[in-house]
Image (cartoon, rainbow, N blue to C red; front, side, top):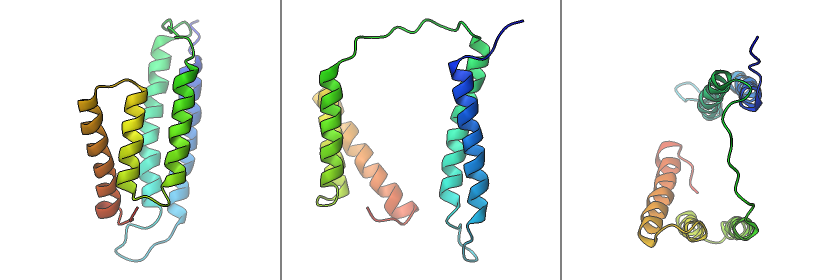
Length: 144
């Protein structure tokens, strides 16, 4: 009998159970008539995360217990500390600097840390920060 319980299967199943719980808790919030209600956003996130967890569980079952060899690289402390520094600065400055500018600087710093090209870094950070701001401002009606 083939064992199917590996790390991916177990982790995916636990996350899937948590997603189901969050999805059902979203029905407890009441909203006004004609409004989507406050439970819609957590339910959307739970569904998206649940889809990823289900795919992780299924791929874990298909791989079986032995799965693929995972090649690990040596832990790079410099990248870790730079990331920690940039995240701390981002969270601390978010209150005083506008979201788009703060996010743009954070993403540029992270792209520099991960050694992406300057052209890619500028395009990626601009599109991502403006896109997230647009989604929250125009779709969710939340000003950042």
